[in-house]
Amino acid sequence: MNIEDRLESIDTSLKTLVTILQSAGTITAVAGAPEAAAAAPTAETKKPRTKKTDEPATKADLVDGDPEGTRYWVSEETQTAYAQKPGDPDPKDQSFKIESSAQYLAKKAEFAKKAQDAAAAAASQASATSAPSATAQQDTASAATSDADWDTVFRAIKELSTAPSGGREAVLGVLKHFGCEGKTVPALKDLNKNAEILAHVQGLLAPAADADLGL
Image (cartoon, rainbow, N blue to C red):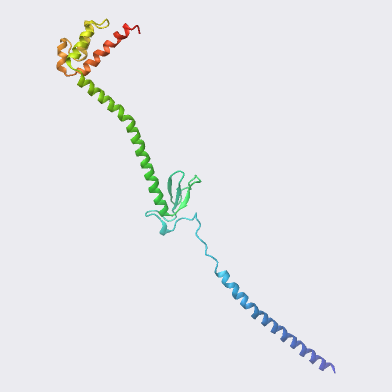
């Protein structure tokens, strides 16, 4: 075999080898295609990103009148609902959590009702504490008025006139105290203040009674 025949044989062999390699590459590509196709749906079925809990409320989730970007915070510990408008600071208390506008409105109403109930309970307790005292004073005054008659008052004044710490000057002082200066004791009867006069006279007699006891 001469040189030309050898060269032609080598050339034919090289072409055959190239054809074989190209065929092998095509087969590999065809075999790999299903694997790529099977992997593709996995990438497409990734879950979409959910909205972060600290993102501002969307326009559909806003309370009427609040601007876009408003965030709603609720704290069960402090019983507070806070609408944070754009530019407002975040609440410092770590117990605050971001909620939807519906939850914010519900909690705001709930906290307001609790505050009103607490205020009403406090007012009721204060009224219950003070009412008996005022009622007792009224009942005492009424009882004194109904029980005091002029004869009782007159006997008390007479007793005052003879008491060691009383006497004529003390009786004149009673007349002056009730606007009857220059008049006699019976003038006090026309005032219709039997209970008041009796209480005043008894107050003047009390020191004399204490003195008798050596107190």
